[in-house]
Structures are given as C-alpha cells and as structure tokens.
Image (cartoon, helix red, strand yellow):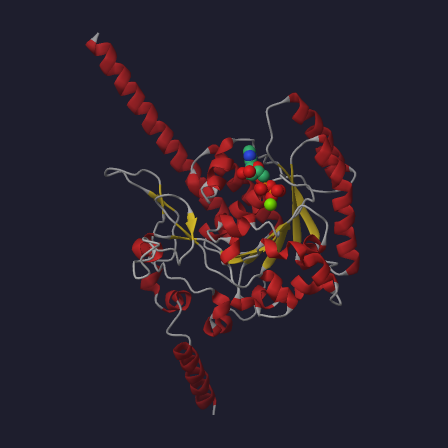
Length: 409
Ligand SMILES: Nc1ncnc2c1ncn2[C@@H]1O[C@H](COP(=O)(O)OP(=O)(O)O)[C@@H](O)[C@H]1O
Ligand SMILES: [Mg+2]
C-alpha cells in the first residue's frame, strides 16, 4: 500500500514536470550534485592568467521563477520568507538604491529573492532592466484582483561586461526580429538577479482605486502569502509618501529598514513614519519590527555629524530603535551605477561603497535572520581578502616600477 502511494506521488511529480516543460534548474541541481559545480559570474581582473571571478552561482544560467513552477512549490513546502520593507516618506533617502543593492547581494549569497516594487515611479523596475511602460501586468493588476501574482513575476539578468541589467527579450539587432537576444548571446555568463514584481507609473493614480476595496491595507500582505513559501527573502521598495502603497508594504512586512540622510528635514519626517509603523502594528501587523535606521549619503561634514550623533543616541536610547553602525557615504558611484541600470555591488564589487553595503547586509541579517546569515560572514571575509590581495599586488608593482626608475637614473 505504502509503495503504491509513493508511486502515485512520483507519477504526479513526473506529470507536473512534463506539464512545465522539463525539470527546472533549481530542482535539477537538487537532484544532481554534479550540476552544483558553480559558475563565477563577476569578473574582477579582466586580462591575463590572473583573471578572477567573484561569487559562486548555480551552473545553470537559465532561470525559471520558482512561483511559476508547480514542482518547485512542492519541494519548498514549509518554507517562510523573511519580508523586509524599506520605507521613508521623504524622497531621495536611498530607499530604491538600498533595495536594489540588498536584493542583489542576497541573490549573490545564493538566496531566493523576490523584489517588490511598491513605488509607482518604478525606479526599481527600471534598474532591474525593464521599461515600466512595457510591462504588461504589474503589482497593481494583482492587487486589483485581475491577475495572480505568479503571472507578473519577472526574472532579472545582468550583463557581466557592462554591469547593466537588461530585458531578456532585448535583441542584439532591435530591427531584426529573428536576431539573437542578449540573453542567448551571454548564455551561462549572465549574472542572475533577483526575481521582480514590477510596477509602472500608471499606478500613480491607483490610491483611490485601491482605497475603494475592503481591507485595502492588507492587499499586499495577502498577495505575498504564497510567495513566502518559495522565496528566502522578499524585499519591498516604497514610494515617498505614507499613502496606500507604503501602508500596504508596512502591513506585509516582518521588518522595516529606514534609510535616512542625516539632514534636519529628514529628521522632521521621522515622527510621522514611526506613527505609521505603530498604526500598521496596531491595525494589521502585530509582528512588524524596525530592523534599523540606516544613515546614507553621509558627508564628512560637521553638519552631518551634529545631526547623526544625538539622533543615534535618542533613537537607540529613548526609543529603543536600532541604528546600523554601517554608514553609507555620499558618492557619485551610486549615481553612475543607477544611470546605467546597475547596482554598486556589481558595478564596483570590491570598491569601498560596495563593501559598505556588504557590511550593512551582515548587520541586517544578524537582525532578520534567514538562510543568508549562514554565508554572509564568509562572503565578507572573502571579499576583504580579495581587496587586500589586489592592494598588495598594486603595492608590489609600484615598488618594482620605483626600483626600475631609480636603477635607470
Ligand atoms: N550614497 C549615495 N551617495 C550619493 N548619491 C546616492 C547615494 N545613494 C543613492 N544616491 C542617489 O540619490 C538619488 C536618490 O536615491 P534613491 O535611492 O532613488 O532614493 P529614494 O528611493 O529614497 O527616493 C539617486 O539618484 C541615487 O543614485
Ligand atoms: Mg525610490
């Protein structure tokens, strides 16, 4: 009897596999340890014998978003993703920059990550390679109830040469519909990004439409419930307001991160944000916790220190709100990366600013947990060692050039 039951399960899985066009890569790896042999997607040194890559990723570049695979859903039964929202009702506080970097780092750690764009200006959607105007269905359609979540999730891909995320439908020759896509050309060299729930600016007038619904504040929370079973982390970007989108993102989250530039105007708004968080806790999401305040765009100015030092004391002392030790400095590297649809942790993977985001992630994972916590320390240590090795190589080269020069004098 037991044997027959087992056979029925195997047959059922087999038919599910057939229906989904074969074994998805994730399951293939799970079954075949040989396929676990990693590929290393980010190139550090381009030329010569010393060319090196960072990060170990699955060998298979082809990617099927797990919610679209019934088989994967079976394998992942019992899982519960950690949901983290980045919120601050003031614009320019680096919500989007922090979201895209955190989601990319978690993906590079080997976690299954879903990014949800809850900001109708759709900068996250744009950064991850999709033109918001071209996305057929978005999160708005899902919250409206016209399409299920799994139909709008998009895989994201980054070009290892340009460091730019791109649309997988993008062709090498836009005029010739039969030409290869960039994804086909890159093949296994592509860098896999997190999965994305896109939004577009058509949703900017959506406040009224969504508010008409009963229980509008928990639409996203309910929508993400099935995704929690297949992803390790869900990271949500929000818009600069305390309207429908941000309230939904707060009600759906386990943790909120508050990125903040240490300026007087930003400090003034924090009381309103904390009030919204408390409201979300009281009305719909008792489990919501503040993971921490992240100081960003920090300048080496006395004016910034004068605001940051007492604010840190007040937040962690009186209000018991964690402030991350890591500060993200102001630098054009972030703007340069954003301009080319990239993220600093890929664009300058061993630079100071990427390292600051990795340090932040280590602090964040210590608070929010999840599978990334296991690999983060080793990864940061590995990156630091690589930086040191490159610095030493440079020093040796500089010294030998100096020796040659003084010998020729
Ligand atoms: N650390 C930084 N230093 C300088 N510019 C930054 C930094 N982080 C982000 N930026 C830039 O600041 C602008 C606003 O950041 P963004 O992440 O879009 O903020 P928000 O989503 O909160 O509105 C963007 O142009 C971004 O490239
Ligand atoms: Mg933004």
